[in-house]
Length: 328
Image (cartoon, rainbow, N blue to C red; front, top):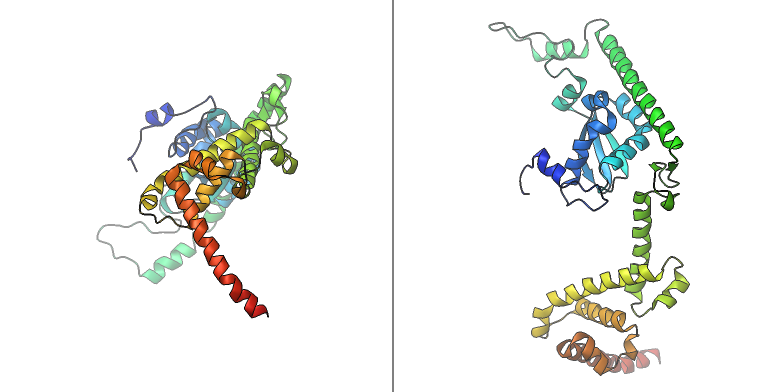
């Protein structure tokens, strides 16, 4: 942790062009944008409490607030995405606050709990049993009036928010905006319709993950061969994922240099090394010659891999007669 950051610092890292915001700043950017996205009335009764894996957690003063705001989640997500284009926001999670946070959101942080007695200096303190019974049994009508007032307040706030969103939707429809077919949010990128930028990013990440999984299992596959199994594996996506895997495996080989110098590489090191060679040459392991192996990965790695292959071959030959004898 680098310590607290000022609002000015957080806003300075805001990336409206769609670039990713550095890790650790996304929650701060969303928190700064929350009042403008939901309005002053809702902002007084809610607080953003954390952001992780695309989900923003929001504290509310009651379950009624959480329930009603859940219906408005798509609208709120859309507004936050407009203000925080570099944040991969996908979901809102509303949680009822507890303790002092709940009192603050209810607007009565300085009030005493209903039914409690004021503490007068010098007066005797009531027994715990009596205080507990007082807290369980508030004055007649006090709890009902408070709940009714909170419900009325909530309905008024949400009604204003719905009216404002309805007017905004009408203006966007007149301007030619379209709703994303994936998440339902408005988008003015007509060339990219019917998907918004966030949904397109998620679809691309899923497609890249499928390509990476296929290449991890069969690194020798070319783009043409892979596309027979994955229709979404276009040439650009294939090359992007291929370069990413090459970089990842090259880093792992670099970190294994100390073991290589001691001639102590393990099975996982050999798997990474062979995967790197097959991906670079687009050849199966048995089709890679010694010269090609050395040119791709270096003589020291090539010798270590061939020694391991020789040891494995001798072990298999030694075990073969024992297996044949056991079957007879």
